[in-house]
Amino acid sequence: MKTVIITGISGVLGSALGRFYLKDGWRVIGVGRKETADGDFYSEYFRNSQKSSEDAQKLLLHNPDLIILNAGQIETEIGEKGEPIIDQFESITNINYTFPAIFCMTANKHELKNNLDIVAIGSIADGSPSSFGPVYHASKIALHYFFSGAGPIIRNSNPKIRMRLYRPGAIKGPLAWAPVNRLNQRGYNLRKKRVDGAPVADKVAIHIARFIKRKALIGTYDEPFSFRLLKLLFAVFPNAYYKLQMLGWKKGSKFS
Ligand SMILES: NC(=O)c1ccc[n+]([C@@H]2O[C@H](COP(=O)([O-])OP(=O)(O)OC[C@H]3O[C@@H](n4cnc5c(N)ncnc54)[C@H](OP(=O)(O)O)[C@@H]3O)[C@@H](O)[C@H]2O)c1
Image 1 (tube, rainbow, N blue to C red):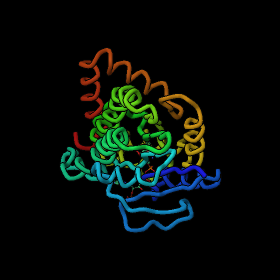
Image 2 (image 1 turned 90 degrees about the vertical axis):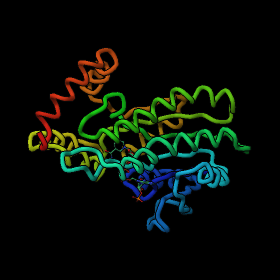
Image 3 (image 1 turned 135 degrees about the horizontal axis):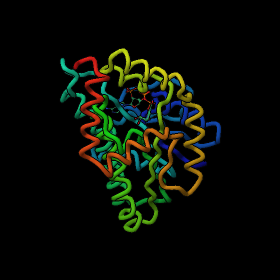
Image 4 (image 1 turned 180 degrees about the vertical axis):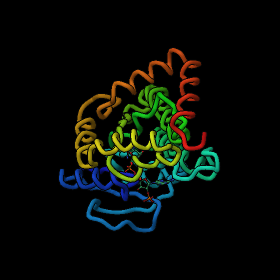
């Protein structure tokens, strides 16, 4: 029986992934920061704070064939004028970027018994930073850069490891709603349209499992054309992109 570790097992996508892999006959190790997580979506549950190389070592001792670094956090608290606040900055940056990177570097040094597929869950929000979720976007961009940058080196250093990234779009659930905390009514209506049309986590989990079976290194759920255009603008005309974000903040934020 193959073993998959899924972090953030208590969440919308984590529990859907757990259910999928259990049904598919895998041993599912669910990981969370809390003492327990009630549910029927894992075979075993382990608490792990997901911060240090020691935390990564503890996960590796389960000898997984696959680990899905799914735990993630978005800005739910903001300052008086919509600015990012330090407490959440540290926690978001750690779980979205630092720990996945630490996990990969620790796995590279670990005496692995079998091949290990490491799949991090990013976001289609990477590549086009936004003033409506800057800490979240920055951490997901960093994750993408790390996987594309360090992935080939680690693969060469330890051929048992394959680092891959999957980038979902909005999924029905509370995390998709979080960016509205900075939006005015007009921005809210736009976001509502997007979240109302978002797929449920079970559908995204099937898409992710299909991606994992294939050989592709980066997987993406349907990405709106507008996102691709924004990324192009960010990459080719960074100054114009910054100005566009300033305009967007004026028009779409409730703080301007
Ligand atoms: N939902 C979307 O629209 C969307 C879109 C693109 C990408 N994604 C990505 O998909 C992944 C799953 O999202 P989701 O919608 O399932 O979110 P969710 O329902 O909010 O679940 C997030 C999970 O991550 C855990 N977590 C949050 N902050 C943590 C921290 N600082 N340290 C350790 N664990 C932490 C949570 O644990 P607790 O139960 O302890 O809080 C929970 O299990 C995330 O990486 C997210 O960025 C989601």
